[in-house]
Length: 181
Image 1 (cartoon, rainbow, N blue to C red):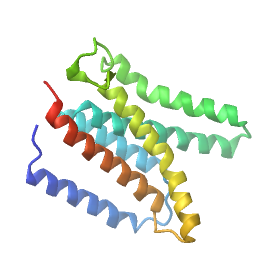
Image 2: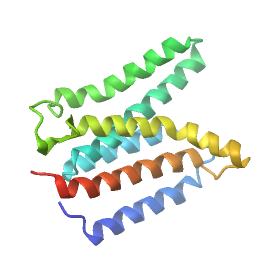
Image 3: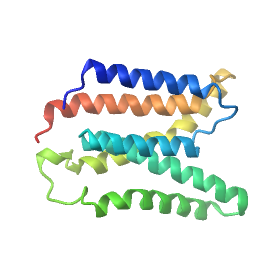
């Protein structure tokens, strides 16, 4: 599938609308329900239009990690839990987010050159990459805040989203040339 200029203009318009809308929201959290719902909607649209599994996986991994961190924060507020239990909550949410894709058959089949990257299923590769990017977004943002003694409004969200978009574009450029349907 080729991305036309009209689709790129639509994506740019939606991103600009989201940025402008974000200034009307009094407070925001990097792992909030709105972010999670937006990622889920984006995943559905991408699959519908035939976007490569690697790129869909990046956003699925980000969705899984952001949901896990969001639920973990709620659990920590209501119940005093140990670090080990927090890790278990995060792992359980990630598994429960990714598991439906396994049962839908996206991870099945013999690996071939057409559906793997470095010998790993494209969707799994994307999930791991997107999860890692989403997981490190807030700590990297905090490090930048400490170094600069200042922050851009919504810096954690913008940094994480920017890294996810950059990874998606990079993998799109790679996979559009090396993907066999």
